[in-house]
Amino acid sequence: MKWHTEYHWFHTKQKKEFINITELVDQAVKKAGIKEGMALVSAMHITAGVFVNDEEEGIKQDMMEWAEKIAPYREDYRHHRTGETNGDAHLKNILFHHQVMVPVTDGKLDLGPWQQIFYAEF
Image (cartoon, rainbow, N blue to C red):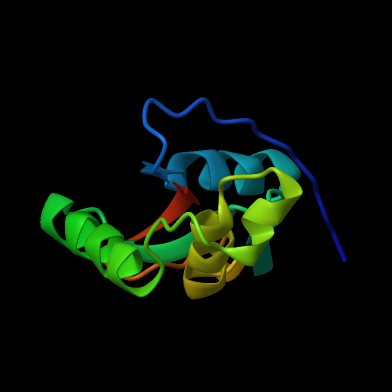
């Protein structure tokens, strides 16, 4: 079994942002020479997430609004007693999760025609 690990750091322009990382993951698969298998993509940050969806601005805005409705910023989160102010970001991580598995077939990410991989910063 082949495996390959890469780490990437993202400098977001906004506090909450989705970054399309499909090309980065595809390059990692090619660099590793993996022909068949799975690619595990994981956000190594507790207030970030990784997900697969459409690269369409409207759906991205809808997803962010949805997350804000379910886990809005509030000053009374118990987590804030630690001195942190990102309790909402921890909850959003649970909504979007921290990792995805993507099939690799014939050396390429096996995504549907509209599927893209995103890193989400909250």
